[in-house]
Image (cartoon, rainbow over all chains, first blue to last red; front, side, top):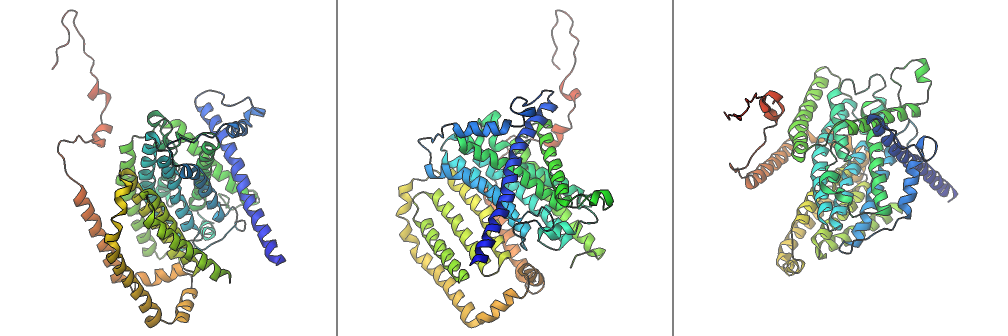
Length: 332
Length: 199
């Protein structure tokens, strides 16, 4: 019995060792975003709370916590409160299978990549339930847009993942990273890498694809009616999802915890630092894209997903498998 | 003990959520309970060690099919009361399908294979690899046939819903992107007192 409780304690500590850094890095990511946007637009960004304004997001969270949580009288009360919780839960349980280094992972399961794909496809429920339960027109429009958008881009994400899996021959995330020891998949599969990053932007509802929350036409999209901490949960979940999709990009294409070249000063640095640096770079790309590109129109978004990405990724799956088969490179 | 306990827990949840799917007054709640039912059947698959089938069920049914259901149901303006009295009409059909599925289960479990056999078969190898081994070899024809059925259904749905309307204005993205400033803006010198001649 003692061994069971011991294992349980270790498990809970392991979970905390993932969740707490994720939540803290969400706060820092929000700060980073405001600083990057400020730099791009030639302003200072937050610079008052704490040194260089680094405590700004913590102050914002405290402010949100002290506000009143409003429930619209015509809303479906249970689902209205449940939706933000679901969104945050889904963005956190995905971390159960993310390997930070070759040994440091909560659950090393055989179908890790499918689990991640499933959890990220559930993410749309939070948005769609929030939009419907608010019983108000702007959230509802946001929810409908989000459902169509996320399903469209999941298709191309699925094909990109299949291309990588053909090269690896395993659904285990650790195997996927270890097969990139000599060459990162971003080099031979460069077009897939680009498509994955763009689809990740659409999947996390980030600019230039943030039509579900498009403030220019829909007030605030699916969370128009949300206030206080229930708004805060959506906010947390969005940024946690960004970090998650960045980690997934790093695992699939940028060789996870491996250094760029396997030589002395680089491979002496622990893998976990390489992982964090790569995730940080992808996140910076997310923010950079936000500052640079205008928002897509809805028909352009659908066209990009169905008429360009879907045929392109389909053809790449065929090309990759034909190439590997012809040169006898298929993994066993 | 733990496995048996979890089986009964998830099975009980599954049946309860299925009952709620049928008897919920609000169709949106029905779809959400359907999602829960799918989730519980995923857990059941994972419990017998078929994690690949379970997670594929979750991806396909929860991640795509149920969202489309929800999408359609949310857009409908259904009067809640008119839905309820129709249920009795479908009972014979429901019983027929239930009977067929029960017969299949009895056939598979009693006559086809003994249970130990199935169990060792499932646990002998990583089940993703097992499906990969047989899908394109032993079950090639069945696999392709089911693909054709799906293709037919897709084409049918498109034919039924797609109506070509010549009055609708369409956008040609290529021509939009290939326009230059010269196509749109023209600098015209106007003589004083004459105005622009439109040509």
